[in-house]
Every structure is written in C-alpha cells, then in structure tokens.
Image (tube, rainbow, N blue to C red; front, side, top):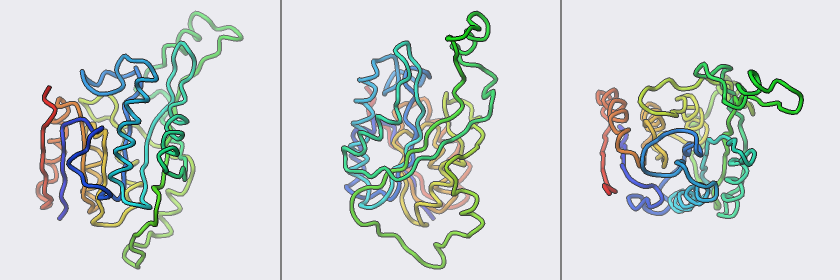
Length: 266
C-alpha cells in the first residue's frame, strides 16, 4: 500500500514537505509562451527572464526537499521566438549546477513525426510562402530529459529484489528514447507515462517517494502508484484536478491512500 498527496498550489513553496524527504523528482515545466495552461503559474505571456526566474524558484525548493545523493529529472524542450532559439535546457543545466547538482545524463526524447497532425507556424511559412534558400525552418520533434544528482552520498538498497534485469537495462540504456506522445484529454501538454515509468524504475526502489512539482494531469503520481512508490504532486491550476481525480479513481481498488489539499485560492 502506498500513499499519495496532491497539493493544488504553487510549488515555489513546498511547505508540506520537510527537508530531504524526497527520493526522486520527475517533472516537466510548462512550455514558455506556447501552451495555454491557465491564469496562474509560469509559462504564460511573459519575458524569457521572468520565465526562468519562476523556474529557478521551484528548482531551489526541489533542492531543499531532495534527499542527498538522489536524482532530479527534468523534461524540457527548447523554445522558438523572434529573438531566436531559447536554450531552456542549457539554462536549466546552468541553474542546477549553481544549486550544487551534478549534471549526470541527457536523454533525447524523440516524438513521432506529425505529432498532433500540425506543422509549426514557421515551418508552414517556409513551405508555403518562403520556400527559398536562407529561409529554412523545421519542425521540432525532440525534447530533453535532463538528469541531475544531488550533493551527498546516495543511500539506496542494493539487493536481489531491487536488481534490474538485463533485458530491461538493454531496453532503456540508450541516449535516445523514441516514444509516442500522451493523448490525455483536458490538459494542453501531458507527457507519456513511459517516461516516468522508466525513470522511476531506474532511480528508486519500492517504498521511495517521488515528487512532481509540475503535476499537470497526474501522470507521475499514477505511474508511481503502479510501481509501488509513494508520491507528492503539486499543480497550480485547480482546473486540472478533475483529470487527476480520474486517475485516482482508477486506483482506489489497490488499497493506496490519497490525500488532496487545495491552497492558494487567490
């Protein structure tokens, strides 16, 4: 039996979690100026510097709650703007290293071509109205999975029951993961269950607690429960709570405990 907390509130202040109580963080911050999430939080129409500052506040809290030696994993893409490509992945690496994390691994998530059946606007313009040398544009079909290790000694059980099989290691131990996108309805940018599924298995053991400070539709929570891990989920947009509750209702027959708290009403 596992326990799961869902907090509807701003994860830049995770007061519900004591220091060093989390064994793994798996999350995907909002895109910058691309998706409509809601009236709160980062990623809305704002300058890139303000967007990064908002992410940094949450990364600082992630540092506080993460157990020494354990891992924080961030799925993020680059962003296109009139000023050029914004290297969000590189800027997050820089912030995390300033906080004392070690950048351990980088996985490239390759999305299927024609995801959602749409071309990006710049590429459509290149195709239809500016098909000339020097106007080249492209559809971005990859994102980054950035893996950071916290300072200190990692304490994790090494035994026959926690040993990963050779077959599974051969499946996941590649720097590129070719995975479909999520088709969860009701959220503008859910990520596929296979991402947290793999990461939770290779970085935790049963009974560990997994945190997602950008909980979205509750994907990390759902997968953590299925794998016998506890979880804490933060999501600032209350309008996504119904989707999260749907995932909870699917699991109530397994005996896991769920608690939902709503704060930051204003």
